[in-house]
Image (tube, rainbow, N blue to C red; front, side, top):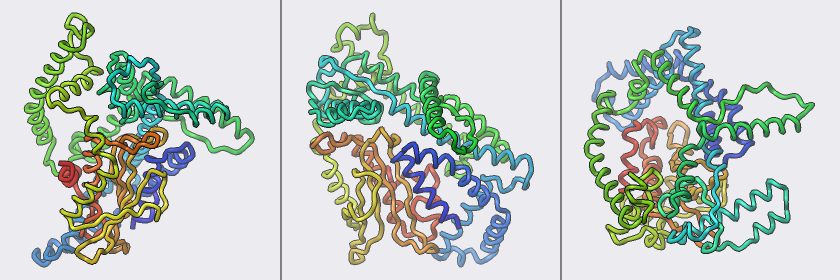
Length: 519
């Protein structure tokens, strides 16, 4: 029932995360309220709710053994139960047209706006930051892979700068310039691979501090004014270009300060939970999770804290001792009473190198993306009896780096059972940070979909020049992690769409397959 809209909007949402452009962003924001309203209309349909409730009641009064004797029957029961719970959390119990329902729906619409604005603000702030380093002494002992990445980032920055200025000659010169990783200049950005490399390997404390604070203050009160002024200028320029044309009335923008967005979200969450009869939003959130109550979550968090904090304190003390012994006068206790946040990653990395006599950079040659994929696909074949085949070029993709693979059941004459897209590299210009797996198509007998399709998205180290992507061990872990999510989605034997793959799985249980693959 929800598939046509859900499928179309899932594609728009995916592209908004991996190919974010001004045009797509504008259309996405314009249509998002309509999609949310349609979803609320479904979730608050009393006719549907009553019909599903009657169905569940009929099952409960029927013979229990007969009702659950088949896998299909169990799927249907869970799908109905999950839908009824979801509708309850979407306000189906609120009287139609009541002030409570009107306010609840207003909050849901506002949530959608705030969430989109938050993500856009982070992406824009990440793109806006860049620090150019020209002194070779500032990058002494930095791994060659990081230097090459930063040198290439500087070249791309010059190309973008020339494009902005409309200087074609300068652009052509920048595009053709030879990148020298050893001589620089080097440009550090806030996308994951660049930021992490700077925090772990940049010896200059002042540079690390600037990069750390740039990352920490993204989309905050410290950067919002400049970003809002730029957005306002662009809006005025667009209005001037469209002068004389009929334009729609637009709401005031939410703003670029995510601190204010977070504060509003917290207030609205508390209000929404109250409208549904919960004491707080945490109780409302746990209604659809495995953890029984807030106290259980608190107890688990305290247990982890009790075990993890002493180990973290010992590691920090060891890193501090190493900095004092080998870092020179600037790390003496008189000059630096304790390591600052922009120091810890650098010295923890040095501590690991000293303790294990191994540098992470030495592992990179073994982790070229193609080699990692070959090993991972071999593991999948041994464990699941499934062959992964490269089908890149057979489908349309959103970026040249994106690859496409198909899965085939070796126990069933190589039957095609699933497919997935892999978007492996960081693209700070138009792709949000992090790593995730998303549902493109799910298995559903009702819809006639027997071959599920997944999106696997990472932000790993991209190739530099003619050199392939050489991954860090952490990036390899991340790829395996997301593949675990993908396998749960793609290898499902469930045929009821609402509970096939990752659908209908509690958030505090959905990480099991990903942790299995990662570890």
